[in-house]
Length: 245
Image (cartoon, rainbow, N blue to C red; front, side):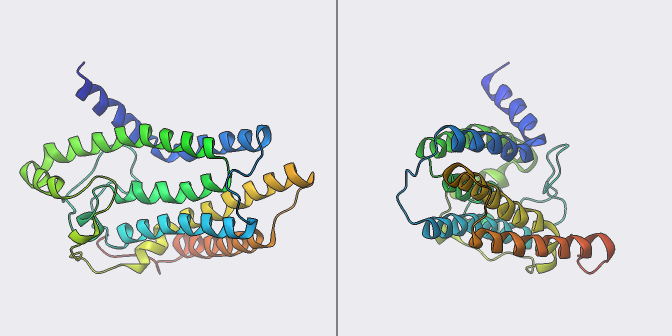
C-alpha cells in the first residue's frame, strides 16, 4: 500500500473516531497535574484563567462561524463516512480550508494551557497535529475526487489551517443562530466542565482539599444552565428546528 493510500485509510479511520481525542487528554492532564504540578507560565491565577478561557471561547467562535453558515449535506457530526453535497468555499472557508478543526484546536488549547505545563502543551499540540493531519488529508482526498478542478482551484488560494483573512468572501447563506444553538451547546458545556475539573484537581494538589475557585464555579453554572435549557428545547420542542439545514 502506498503512503498516500495509507494516509487516506488511516485518516478515514480517525475521522470516524475524531470526537474521542479529547477523552485521551483528560487522563493525560490528570497525570501531569498529579505527577508534576508546577506553574511554567508565571501569571496570576485569575489572569491565566481568563487568558485560557478566552482562547477556548475563540475556538468556539470559529466553530460558530462554520455552523452558522453550514449548508445541508456536509459531514458535521457524521462519523460513518465523508459527506459533501457541495464544496463550501465562502465565509470562513474562504480564508481557511479546515475551520472546524482550527476551532477544535483552539477550544482544547485553552484547556491544555490551563494545566500550566509547557511540556504537556507541546506534547498535546503534537498529538493533535498527528491525529488531525491525517483526517484533513483524507477529507481533501475525498473532496479532490468529488469536485476535481473546483477543489484544486480553491485549495491553491486557501491555506489548510492558519487563516489568511485578506481572502474573506461573504457566505451565500444567511447566518442561522438557531443552527448554532442547536449544535454547539455541547461544546460550550465541555469548556465549562473541563476547566472546572482541572481547577478542582489543581486545588486538591496545592491545598489538599477539593475546592473550586469562584470564577470557575460561576463559569460552570452558566454553561450548565445554558446546556440544560438548549438541550431541553432541542429534545422537547421544534423551536430550534431549521428548515433545509
